[in-house]
Image (cartoon, rainbow, N blue to C red; front, side, top):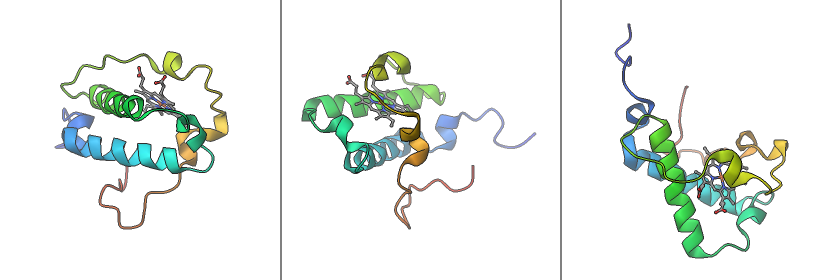
Length: 106
Ligand code: HEM
């Protein structure tokens, strides 16, 4: 049995601060992406801050962290936005070279 057994994904990713940094970076990259930026084009600052906090809570809770996600489920919150299959997160631009938050391995 490996030393990682029983350790939550939340802990392995580095806990709240690391996940918050990833969420912050991800949202900035999504918003500045030439194809995906349209989803945030007309949104106010407060709504974006709230969305970022929801994303952090969701990722922490889903990874086994001690947070409680109070947002909507993923189908409900994205339904009707017109996100195409090709626009999935797999098509996001690669993290900047040398970015310390870049996840290596799997
Ligand atoms: C290209 C893919 C995606 C796009 C364009 C997108 C876009 C958005 C937008 C515009 C909102 C705000 C909705 C609103 O306030 O009414 C939102 C909410 C949210 N998204 Fe995404 N999203 C994407 C993928 C994802 C993925 C993969 C996750 C999870 C890992 C995620 C997690 C969330 C969460 C937790 C919220 C907040 C839900 C709530 O407020 O109740 N999104 N997304």
